[in-house]
Image 1 (tube, rainbow, N blue to C red):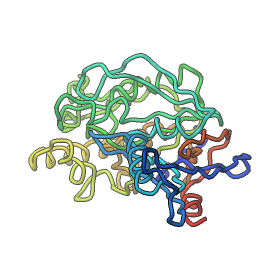
Image 2 (cartoon, rainbow, N blue to C red):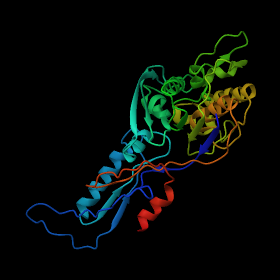
Image 3 (cartoon, rainbow, N blue to C red):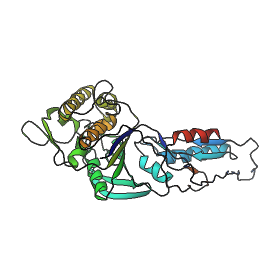
Length: 338
């Protein structure tokens, strides 16, 4: 693996510089017996929500907000910029924003609660493959929380299929996970073995890591040439700011569960090594730590930043075509000011 990257942007859709995108002002008209042109000075409005977990996707939220705004001020120009932070909805936001991206199906994988889950990934026009953890093993797809037993195994199954498809540069959106297993489920699906003192494989889930005695990585699939993890947290793996303490309760963990999971992750770090205190190691229940450490043993990590910039969409205006993926945050601010 030539490079390992952690990034902490807030992903959004904006026009890529030099893409040739042309902007058009949309004039809305009130219909009905009292129809009349808007008399207020037209404004340019940027609608940029993230998803509302369990209620609405980012794209649906943006569309609803824009429609409501135009009902009151039909003469304004409204720019919809659905957001994603690497968690729930990241695939949809990027797929919507980058016209040349291709959403590929990969059958079903093991969900966080053990039930079958849909598997998808996005082929980006710059050659990278985008995988969203929450899309296959996210908390939103679980029938009920299972803080000690939930697993990332399905993520590893999906990554194996993406590698089989020939991807050499993989981006994984972390966030919205249903588990706190340090990424061990994903690594087990990729060939790693997590064993107890008798040499027996551990069951899935973070709780089982309490009796972890050894790890065998000889069967682990080789990593991609480049691995980039998208996350928006600085949490370390363990401790009061760690994966279990901060995010465990969101996944149904009781105070006793949080204590057990944190101790289990400490045990994982003791056996696996690496940098459990690195910023972002606790992302997605410690999946960032597990992937970085296990796959990183066969690579030379490159501590650089990477961001994505999908395209944008205006009301009544088709998305512009761009083959580039660039940083977005400053362009959003410029769009709001211009």
